[in-house]
Length: 171
Image (cartoon, rainbow, N blue to C red; front, side, top):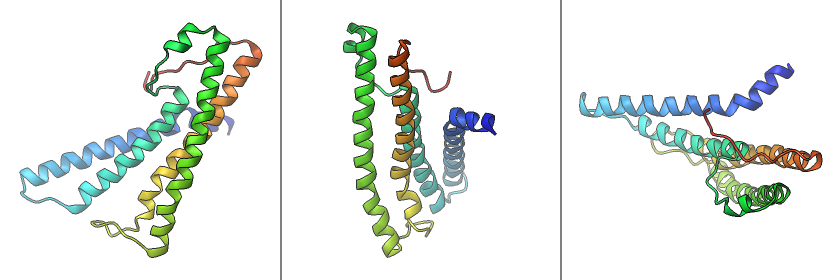
């Protein structure tokens, strides 16, 4: 069980991102063929690809937080001693937690309004809540990853280990 949780912690988002990306490519390829060869296109293709892309972006942002793969200006951290750089990384994680909490708070209002009024998507006629949830779900995953990052940074500071500067998404 512990191995499964560890694998899910390390690869869960990657598998989901790969699935979403493959789905988008497949649907768009089918829609291009349908539009230019068969002279017919569907409403569901564009809409499902768009909503899959929205989830892909927010889950990808959470992975980038975990791996410290976001674009950043690190001139200052390179000039600081290792302990100072680790403190800067810790401060940035804490500020990102505040941003994520605000984003979750403000993104829940459209979800609740859509739920209350039963707002549906234009083409699929599915309740829009499932797609509006992408933002709070993405930021919630980001909060979990930020918690792990803060814990790692504190442990690195406490035990004198070099701070984690990041890794690429697909090594």
